[in-house]
Image: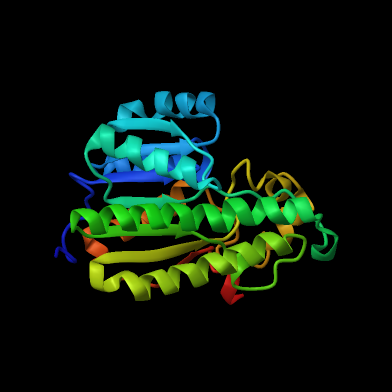
Length: 256
């Protein structure tokens, strides 16, 4: 236990899904700079290769293409990560999708299925793989699920996405309760508006962005790196007595 020590991920291996850009890439870099070896995953290998080139200066990073909504792909991801680095100590579930922006009631069935496949099933499949591996080797583990403040409140124009993020928070709490005796910690982060390609429909729209920023006490939206530090902390032994919680990183938007 090192709850008062400097935050470090030395000698740990971390898998980051959705790691080829945005919040995932920022978290991957944060983990590398904290001393971890990192495996980034996303669906497209060229995007991963480009991210590896950007991250190579920070530490040892590998890239494995994976559709996290497909359990066989997730099994292969963990098999390859373990083959490369010998073990996996932590997981950041970050891969997500939001194909429908509009009234919730108008969301097509295919978009609902896709959103739940990636945002819920994908998180669950990856969490189950990490838990199975950690329990098999008799060691501890840490999972960080990237949720959203949209899972904690009404999510106008992003209703189905908000539903999935509420499910992620529920999943986090139940897994934390069930796996605590195995030494596996499970926490979530609920970001507010972050400047990423994923959120470009809002950030690039001045009226939508200003509507949110005016109601945010810090008076701005955030950059991906501002989520990374929280993720590194929750993965580290400095957070050894924290599990089942959701850390809100939103500039105060949910208290305004």
